[in-house]
Length: 247
Image 1 (spheres, rainbow, N blue to C red):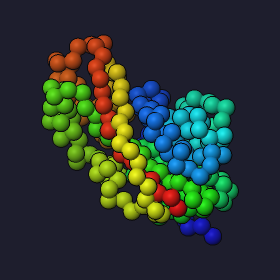
Image 2: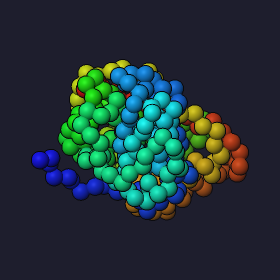
Image 3: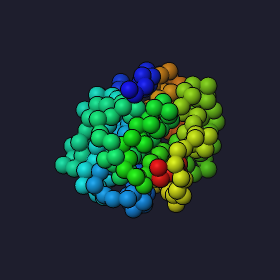
Image 4: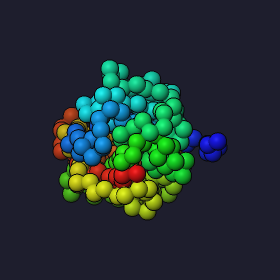
């Protein structure tokens, strides 16, 4: 009998549509690298899929993708894909059969899981030699002037507001134990051409801002507007955090 599930942390159901609009996708080259490391290309499980940002990329490499999220509202905001089956399921307990998966992915999600239960579930559904991977992103970089405002007026005031899971991601997942034989993943980053308004929507989708209210970031947004004109596009970079292991 499998262990009892811990209460599911849900900081995103209340703004699923904003999340779908504001959150970036992942570098296709990174997803391709993970797919190449998998033992086959029959089935991938995208746990904590959100709106399916990673699942649709996985569908370019796998015959089937099982994409799950504990939030029904997040799943409802996902874009349908003919090779992706979306399901409302906790990452700690999914409906996949034993030994059925080539790749289990947690994209921008591992830091919210009960790791003991999730790892047990990942090991259950992975076939021998299957790959478990976790990827994520946190801060962004634009230019020295914008970055200084973000550091002082956005990130510093938010520090006491982050949940414990956020700090695991901020630390680059380095403190998280990972099962199996670690596999090195090449460096990657998300590159975006965004307006200031798009960047602000991304910030508004952060769990801490949703929990404590947009007033937390109002002063930072005002200061950003003084150096970044409306509707002007700039290059935004988000370094990727990645861990992978063969289990």
